[in-house]
Length: 347
Image 1 (cartoon, rainbow, N blue to C red):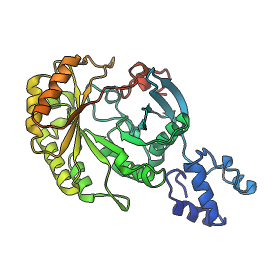
Image 2 (cartoon, one colour):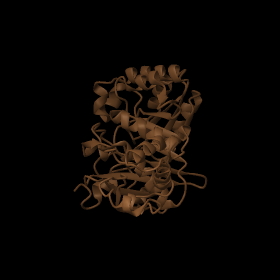
Image 3 (spheres, helix red, strand yellow):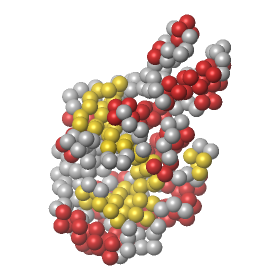
Image 4 (spheres, rainbow, N blue to C red):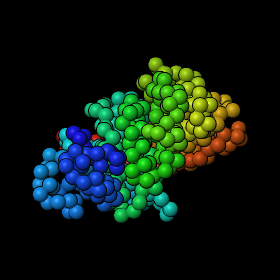
């Protein structure tokens, strides 16, 4: 097994230990130590024979190291994690009274170039591998000393540009870590053909697709969307919505639409009216997200009155809507902020 052990199933680990001349139950031991006890090296797994452990120095479990940790007053914690090749990614642990949510990254950087996003201003370095995604969840779980209940793919990167690794990570989080698919959300700005492909596949591993798809609209018409999201030039709003309709038809699962409210850009009453028309008859839910300002962009957050007015117009048109206020604002919690500001993070 040349790939890291993190991300492997019990049957794969069992097969590997047997190839090493070890009894099958060693696979169960390694599996428990990786997924339940947070082992970061085989040397830590003291139930394994010392003589055998001494021969496994080159076998990696696949855990990251902590580069920086920042905690906000609302107890949200942002992590910069250093990967084996020295790249740095962001992960956020978001606690509430009833749950612990982890916001994970799917790429190092992001190629989409969204003008309001700090990550998008830095470009793409590479895709993350499955174990590097799963590691983020285990890292937060260990730091909080609390079981992770929810995972959102809303960190650095565009998940559907790293589709295979992301879907495999969802499988591992579900089947090996024990997080229900319905407690996992995949957020995408939209890649032509990929949402429909998800619906047509309808599977995560050998199980039905049940995670929540969240599509980042951020605009009610093509002109505004293109001004905010450069990739929208090649993927018009109506084409994106048509794929979302196909997805709902194929999976019988509603789509969540993410809409970042930018003051005097996309937060006017006429924008709310347009958005309601776009989503008429759609099995969907809208998350309104007041903008979290970053130094790299000159956009501002609307005041509470404009936010509430926008929401009320959608409700009037019977569009399911909620307002999601950002957590961890005093910990550079906007995606890409902390990585950009901590000295040496890009080294």
